[in-house]
Length: 108
Image 1 (cartoon, helix red, strand yellow):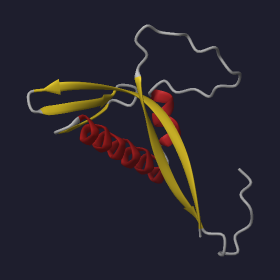
Image 2 (cartoon, helix red, strand yellow):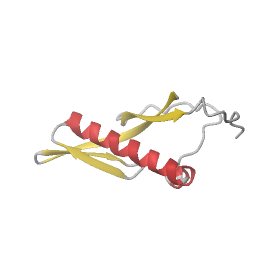
Image 3 (cartoon, rainbow, N blue to C red):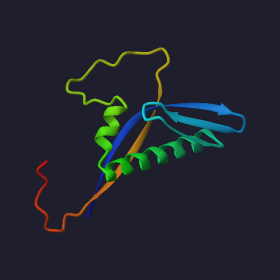
Image 4 (cartoon, helix red, strand yellow):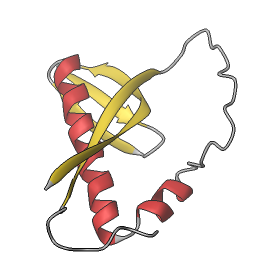
């Protein structure tokens, strides 16, 4: 078995609400919370990871990303500088590949 990891970088928003910090990922419409900023970020990261893995396992990842407005970047675009750039969160998406099963190479 070989571990492969993809990483997705998504914009997030954090908001203090009484004793909780609410973390949101607007592009995926996912939310979480924690007692600290670090805990809210960690919880949101876990929620996003589980959501994306669940979509992959159900065969709906492509459709979900398209419905959320994702599109492949065929040509590099200039990043527009914003006065208030969004906070970004790197989300690891782990996979295992069984290299000893005798399967032929993937020909997607």
